[in-house]
Length: 91
Image: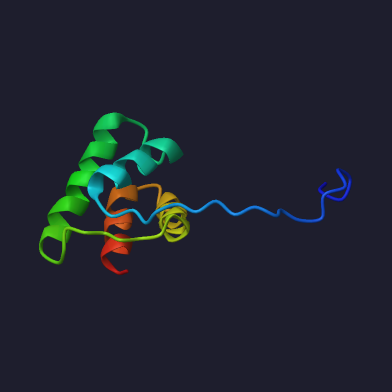
């Protein structure tokens, strides 16, 4: 497809600051529509908040890594929030 458009590669990079807090995490989760409702998303963020309070409240995760974690969590249709929490704690 790119060859048909006479484009061999992309020559620009977009730098995105690391996701450092739960507000930023919530914004990303909303943008990628991981959860069906605002309530489900808020519940998931609260689960992460409670779990992270025992470790460190700061996330400090790059957007590429976070998007990868989100896609892994999306695969667990029955327990998306629980999977997201465990993946974020395991980083």
